[in-house]
Length: 171
Length: 286
Image (cartoon, rainbow over all chains, first blue to last red; front, side, top):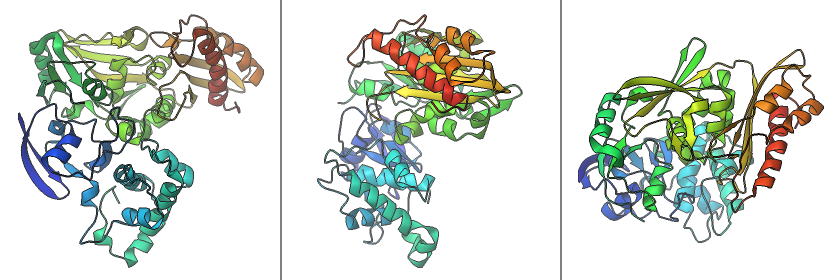
């Protein structure tokens, strides 16, 4: 067992982990953060996407022992005081989920995408989500939601809302 | 699935890493970005007794200018390679090929050095390394040595790097002002290349002054398409010349047969993709 200290969704944790424990299993089984889901066994699906020190990663492809001293944001750390993150709200508004299984990963990757490019066109959104699979094939509304969120998260628009409530993706 | 148990060390210097590798013996494995290794461990296709994680060795990250050469630290991530101004200016081919790897999440973790030492014949960075005449700097208990890309790739998943050695940096001679293109043929967005072609071309007054072409997945190791290069150099940069030169693309290759393609089809792809890659690199519409 190896001791790690890690900040997850704003809370600091100190835990002993086996080196072979995947980050996603640490988050789910040890911390109870089951919002981050496992969708495949091949690293293709992106459902387990979280932010590691501000960048999106697939938490099935990182060992928990590797995140010692790092900061993780999961889907559970986005909302503030009962208010959804603008990306979560946009997924809700645009009916961007059917079964909902890919949604946590889609939202985490979409926030990262807007961190790189706050004003993407449709093609950029589609390419930015290439590592996230939706088995319901509900991509139309997912893309629509990301474009909607981009519009609402633009600095000018955001200033009128509550800028302090927005986290993640280098915004 | 959960990987087999292993011991884990995360050294902070290259010397410590080499020491850890020497002590652990042949069953140790280096963990770089982990985007190939972790899935392999999870499927239990490999079960090393120890992982030596290079992620805490900060000296292995970053890109620097060294006169006629740019030096890329082996642990520089794909994301950082794509966005690095030195690489974009002097080794555009590498940035273009790196852009086609995996997906954004994988490019945030995966590293140039990891991809090269993994040496998957369908990996997209091997052919650009050959086309750009990259040199690999390797450190081990015996000291430091430099191996040209043309000798670095030994076989399927096998390079010149020995079990107690670490690839620390990749030295790439500047190809400033060259046109470049990486043309990749794949089944779906995330799939491996069935065949791909890396091309870099320097044109002068409408003629091809210099050309570098290498092929992905046309043999166990990347293939340097010298026949194509010879047919290009000194010729006018026209669609006809390029099409004729691309006919040489399958020479000296030994493509494998798998569920995606048989050797004949791969040879056909090599010619077609070479024509497209060189035309794009030379600034012509493919």
